[in-house]
Structures are given as structure tokens and as C-alpha cells.
Length: 233
Length: 326
Image (tube, rainbow over all chains, first blue to last red; front, side, top):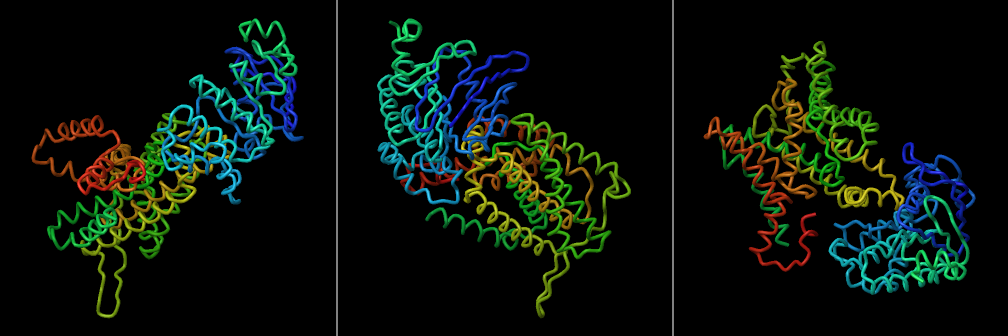
């Protein structure tokens, strides 16, 4: 469904992603893991149209999306849930969800709103509250629900566990597993490696702008290098 | 409920105003204030709701004023037509100017619009065969009188013009309310709050920003036309950057991103310098200090503060303060 082929990305003169390739098949959950500065977010920016790769191609659903403006990429069916609980803080939870469904503005979105309220019962209680006044975990739920409202073919989660209490991270993990159960194709970018490997089917390990190893989550959890570098084993 | 009662009271007050304060001076100030309210409401759309500060509002007001004046003097159009057409001239100018400048964000956009206003001003001063340069355009006609049987509305009379501008302001308010409460309005606010996220949700942000910019400029152009036919004479002076800053000030002072804030703010930016005339040379100092105090202690502006105050007075239970003054 999403195929990234030999993508190179530079900020000005400095190349930070040196030819990365990976693929996400339909119905799969793929994790992109790696330390700070590995180029994870940069690759996501390129997929979402915020950066243009200097070489290589990004193909989604059979068509290249490299260099398309961000809103076009979104319209093709990629929803992005950016890091740092991004939402519209001075809008109600409900308005945030409505804007998430902007791509489908001519359709009825009531069934999806109900679905989101089922998935996140706490948002039902908070639906008329300003999103900015919610707790960190609740804001992350708004961000996730907002992304899902677009009924995306592929949903990208960028560090959903970042800056969130450990207990809530467990909740987010359960949520991601539930979303996966709904049949949504997921690309998960995480530094919380153990969590990512529990959720994802496959994983790519990124270091200093290159894929250093890849395989099923099982293989990755057993890989001694991954264990020593990320899992504290 | 109380909100609607207050709105009705303000409208009734505005209608009664020329009969309560019959002095020409006050009516003159009220007309200017309402014209500035239209400009400020336009600035509010781009600045308060969309989050992009435009320092070109007075320039666009100038385009509206000169195009309406020239259409009626040189091209011989009826004044009514000229007033209604001039916002479209402004819209075209702002479309051409806005398309490239909306590629830059934040402060850079503000600087580009500042330059835009300077360009407009320089053209008004130097294109002497058309604009008359510094010496301006005299003899701009008032709108043609409306005669219904024995009853005549003569717009050379200050009172009649007052009601014309009041009606125009009401029309602008209805338009802005319709835009802000629509899905377009929601998207504009989404752009203000998180543009990247709006883009990620599939919003073609540039299109909405351009709409917002052109809409706000058209309102300024409309206000400019009303100004030109009221004053009967225009020169480039009122369309300089200084006055664009006044429009921005009105929005911040009154309450950015609220429907009634810019009205309060524009009224104050017109009235305060007049009221402070008693202080003579100290007037600008007092004015400046007052503004600094408001910005420090009421960063959301006067209107949200007044709204909270009245809510406290009437003891209305409303857990969601921000909702009420949107």
C-alpha cells in the first residue's frame, strides 16, 4: 500500500536520510523505531508532503505522492497523527473530530463520531469541552480520534507515547491494538520500542538515516542488537 | 437570552443616537467610528480568526475609497453603484497581492502586507493624473437621494448618512457572522490554531487564507467607499500604514477573534484621541500608556472582559466562557 524506495532527504546541504526503503502492506501494522536523530520524523514529513525528497520515490496506492502538497496527500487517504498531541486547542472535542473528517465533508460523519465515542468513552463526556483544557492522555485520544475520522487508508502515528504518563501509555497501547483490530493499516513511529514491538506486525530499525535491520516484531525483539540498544536486555 | 437583550439594546441605542446627541460633532465621530468598525471587523477576519496579521487594511480602504470616488466623478456611475462595485476592485487588488504573499507565514506575512500598504500609499501620492496626488480628490458626490412619495432621504444630511453607515455596518456584521459560524469559519480558526494539522487533515490552507485575506480587504474597501462619499474629499493621508496599525490595534484592544470586540476597539480608537484632547500635548502619552495597560492586564481584549463581567452581574451559569464570545 505504501512503498518508500531509496529515499534521500536533505535539509539544505545536509543530507539526513541516506536512501531508506520500506513498505507497509494493506491491513498491516508496521513500526519504524530508532533513537533521536535517526530520521524517523523527517521521513514522515516527506510522506506527508512537508518535505520533498531529493531522490527516491514514495508510492501510495499505486501512485507517487513524493512532492505533493500536504493536503493532497491527506486527500489520497493518508492520515497523520503528529507527535506532541497536536489538536485544535481552542475548539471543542466535537469540532476537532469534525475537522478531522474534512476530507469527507460531503458525507455524513455521524456513524464515525459514534464509533470514536465507543472507542474513547471518555471523549463522549468531554465532547463540548475545549480540547486544550483536557489532560495529556485525553488530548492524545482527541488527536488519534481526529486522525481516524478521515477514514484513512493508512494512518500514521508519530510517537503517540511521547510525554505521556506510563500508565496512560498502556492505555494508548491498548487503543492502538483496538484500532489495528478495526482493520486500519498503521505506520507507527516510536521510541518506546518495547511497546511498538508489542503492537506492530513488523518493524524497521532506523539509525543515522539508514535502515540497519528489519523483520517481524518477534524477530526484532529477539535480535541481540535491538535488545542491547533499546530493550535494556 | 441576556446576550440578545443586550444586542437589541445596543441596536436601539445606535438608532436613537442622532436624536439623543444632536451635536454634529458627535454624529460625525459616530459615523467615522462605524466606518472604522467595518475596517476593524475586516481585520478581525484575517487577524483574529485566521491568525494572520495584515498591515494593509488602510491601503485597501484607500483602494475602495479612490475607486468609488473615481467611478462616480470620472466615469459618471451613480454613487450607489460605485459604492457597491468598489469592494470588488479591492478584492481583485487583494487577490493579486495576496496570492504570492500568503506563501510566507507569521511575521513575514505581516511585513509583506506592510510593504503592500506602502506601495499603495506611494501610488496614491504619485499617480497625480488619476489620484490628484497629495492635494487629493475634491468634490466627491454624496449618494443620490432616495425619494419615496413625499419622503426624501438626502444623504448630504449628516443624520441620513449616519443611518446609511449604520445599515452598512449591520450588513457587514451579518455577513461576518455567517462566515464565522459556517464550516469555512471553523476551518479559518483551525488554521489559526494549528495550520500544519489543518493541512494534514486535508485542508488546502492557502485557499482559505486567500479567501480570508480577500474578504477582509473587501470589507476595508467597502468602508473606504463609505468614507469617500461622506467626506466628499479624500487625500492619501488616511490610508497610510499608521491607520492600518490603528485597525490592528482596534482588533487587539477590543478582543481578537470575537464578533463584538472589534466594534468596541474601533469605537475606542476613534473616541479616545478625541476625549483626550483636553490633555493637549500629553494626549498621545496618555493614550499610549492606556493601551499598554489594556494589553498587559486584558490580553484577550476589552470585549471578553466585559462579557465575563456582565455574565457575573447577571449571574448566568455558563461553565464554558470561551464558547460564549465566539
